[in-house]
Image (tube, rainbow, N blue to C red):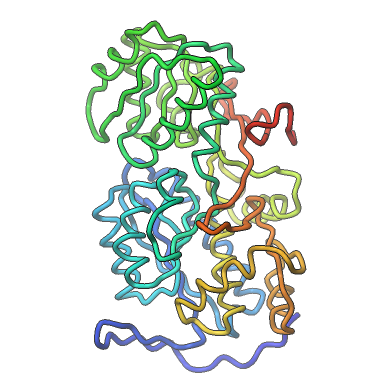
Length: 410
């Protein structure tokens, strides 16, 4: 284990001329998560995953010989509150890096108006919109989850496997929904399928019968629903009650046990969906599942937990590599610790990684979520899971790479 120097000084926080001065030895990470709103049910387990990573890092000696601190902010799953919360984390809490947001509709404005302008590394663990790839973010926005440019292909392949030749699409009207709907529609039509209608929906409405009626007019075999649990369950209930659709294919945002609780197992039986998902037999995935279960009894069947954990680990390792908590230096070190070449290190091996870095050696972090090799746009490759609602539970049928027939890990 790396020998650590004694802890030095207490954290000093002082606003001065619009900037915050903090102890050079104390890394502070902001967790920008939805604790309320449409993605509330995803926010808490993502936060627990970030806390798990911080706990492991501190038990291994911390970063730059000091314990890592975590500051939490609620995005409410809405852009304006999300931006305000990010500004608070950066300018008042003095964080050196941000994990989040979850929804692309929050992540994009935070990147544009906070991360890029303030020069703070932001790693989203759940924002999948293709809009993020070309975003002008001064290279301060990264993500540990693959783009929906790939998930659209995965969703198309799964819909075709169900025997659906004509489908309707209803998607949430934000960057996530629009990007995935377009990616899916392009892939599905290229493969010979037909998208009869593609209709956007707004959050927070009491009724979506108009959208359902419009989408069902073309005689679609099934509904592709791209959205979040809170409004998604309203759309599903009204679809079933009104006889619009009874066959569905879900995006990742609807992998949620709450749907079973609120709609009943029978209503969703046989429904399938896709979600970015690592191969469960990797050492990193096994460590994360074991550590999370030990801390919280079990890993909930929700996405973006391992990606939140990886984002914290990466910020910690980048800070070790930089040798300081300078925000730009952390950003500049991120690819150095995430990408080859270097000795492979993974979840639970922070002390080993820190020792290697202290000896001037290169490392290549292999995450709980799989490869986190960042390209020039801050994107990562990835695999996708096919999940299904079966007998009142959400089960993973297989993990595959879109475009590679028959590839699976389980």
